[in-house]
Image (cartoon, rainbow, N blue to C red):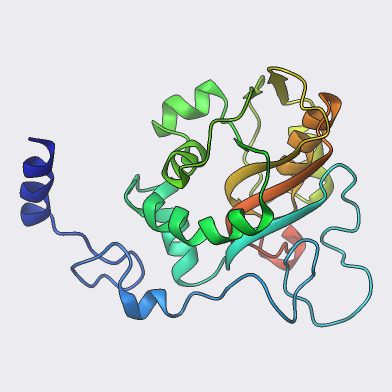
Amino acid sequence: MATLLSRALDLLYPPRCVACGAFGQNLCEPCGDQLLPASGPGRCGRCGVRRDDEGRCPDCFGWRDLDGARAAFEMEGAARRVVHGLKFSGIRDLATDMAGALRPVVEALGPDAIFPIPLHARRRRQRGFNQAEVLFDRLGWPPPPGRLERVRPTASQVGLSASERRENVAGAFRYRGPGLKGATVAVLDDVVTTGATASECARVLREHGAGRVYALAYGRAPYRSPASGRSDD
């Protein structure tokens, strides 16, 4: 019955590419071919951000509790439209494509557990879902032994400086569950930018025994200070 309903809805409201608007798929093949992998030469080996110089990476130099970040694609063009299509337009089918792109990245890292970064209950009610949890469900990874919880609401990170982002999420999370006993774990979200949210989650997980903590995301966004006129979400 559900399949018949889905087919009927596809006939009435056929999917359209979130990048170019073409009918047929949520992300058409030509637009998908334009996605830029967030790995390989010209990137920081620790956090995956694009770099033009050598030496210490300013994007992750200050990370203390977070061991690194891994992402599928650069947060630009079609990748940005995909992320926004899930988060702001509620096109949950996009999470299947996103999870498919992320799966090789996750398998290469091989974490013992993955924790989707939680939304506060107020934000979840406003949005109707948590995009990180939807992405985790589509990823098909085993459930983690405990759960991360967001214990207080936080302002949007968009438009904040790097230090303001860290202050904004300080003390916003807690972990409930058994000790993690040296496990390699990952925190999952749709996008990683400064890593402030993932770093705060990592701090909490390390307090409960995690040995190594990584950020996992579909999109890797370079940070630009508010003064530069751009700050990715």
